Length: 537
Image: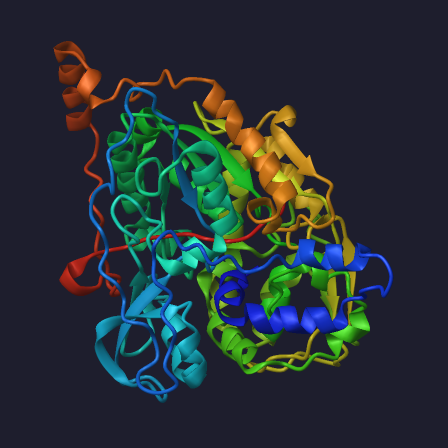
């Protein structure tokens, strides 16, 4: 889950090659091969016009960050407008650009922004990659900062577009192609994304002004698309980020004027069960849980730890966003065992001790506040005035407990893969109990469950059966015209409505992106934000 996007860009060919070798393909009939093809679809090559840069085997890693486009690529059709769609991706779904002064371990010095996440050329310098991706926290000032010598920020992806970067175009390729080819949407015209720095938790996103910028992007998208209020599509950790955005105390008037719907895909409402712990303890990548979780556990446990996974383990230490995905206890309960060793079980209530035992003191310090913030998102109930749906898979084996064949956890060193896993129903990343907590936010008939075993956490936005269900949910908004305050469009308002709007805008707080102690801007002081992740429905 946490590295699904990188796997899609960097290691897809290798993973598919290994899967092809391990998959049981019968000699007669085609059932096994058809299942393999359903689980591992071919990598799409349509990037919507963005070039694919082949990394060179020498020189500074990281593709030079492309300049962002401003404004719409073409004019919207205000005679027959579509609902504005804005995707908030999950963890790892936004490109991160950066610079480095050469102070990191083995890091070159470069002042021109380069792509850091997810760019495969950093495989040549994983030590510097892990350093640049790390986040520091100062307990005295309660502020977050980049690692030494690093400036890192989310690629803007165009304004208000948000989709103009290769990682988003590839990872969400089946979804946006279905919307463009099947429903007549246009990237940057009525279909947008809201990138953000997915390494941060809620407090860090607040510090760098991310919620203000996401709100400004949505508002600009709505204004550009004839005033059609937005339907926000959120995925994985993006679900939590979207809920935090919509509940922000400063943004109530903005929400009423600009948002009509929320479609939550594979939401981590009570955390990701034991899934995130596998990344925290081992750095493990699992981009296709519908396939890998179905393999014999002995086969998976025997796989070696790859160099990239060691780097992922390194920068996941202290990473605030990982805490957003740890179990809160609202699904399986506080006494549920998430990690077991030969001598000790760690329950949900003991996750702080688990973090301290593995040497991640920074995460242990931040854990309680992060879990409480997640619980508050659910306890607040439905978002006022926003019609909410949840879409998710239910038939993919999902880790509930990880069993490690060790006496004790090593401090700040990755473990081998779990020797065994206790599995339960879910989407491969989120347990069914977690996913069904959406009932606290939406009517029961707005919880749409997919029982196809090939539709995992990412399958709702990538597999044909998952996409068909998601499009049917979005169709409910297409069938009902927007009658909200922005729907008439700026050109259709009369003088009285325009005066009322101006008065309302004067009364609203200014939503300018705010600077903080850590560097989040690129050249020219730009601040950028995006979100991506993967779920199954």
